[in-house]
Length: 226
Ligand code: ADP
Ligand code: MG
Image (cartoon, rainbow, N blue to C red):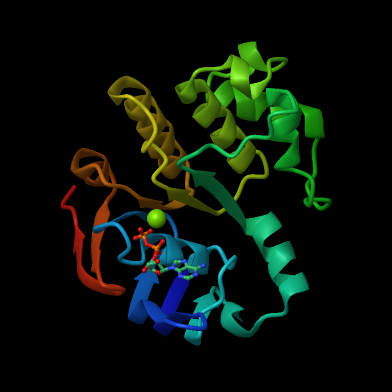
């Protein structure tokens, strides 16, 4: 599904040049569940943002199925993201002024192509993460675990092939973190490919492959025996 070849990403400012990614070569097959670990600042988010096409590599190629995304136009990338990707963040990133249902609806905004009833899709996505009973609430009225489940509903309402999660349990207690991991595991069992950044070794063990990064490089990539 994914093939990164010789990806480099350098951030340049007036005074410093930071190499966030160096010589990244990575293949991810459809249906995989991959965990990315490594110390703060080693490039995990930059790698995830590169996979999500919200950050462009300085050099290298990013093949997604038959397309080279590293050179694709921004308008085509926006359409690619809307059709193919679901994002989940550590800080949930819900919109405070919208209800949970309206937040989840946002996940369909740029998906004109979908068949089926759109409001049915929204309700189904909320039910899948057990947040339907809070559909009319606002984010601040919900616990962190409930907010993250709502954010997952927004990510999956358009049936994305690839879910990118950047420390999705980083702001949650053990129990809510475990619930989020159960949801990700079942989404993966239903066919979604998942790439997740985490600091939790036990959450990384739920993934089927673990990639360790250091200083912008992949140092190990180990598949778990099942
Ligand atoms: P991680 O997610 O592993 O903590 P990041 O991918 O966020 O690491 O960052 C990797 C490196 O790139 C860090 O040194 C960080 O300071 C730098 N970096 C990330 N984003 C930017 C940016 N937009 N501008 C400048 N430097 C950045
Ligand atoms: Mg990060």
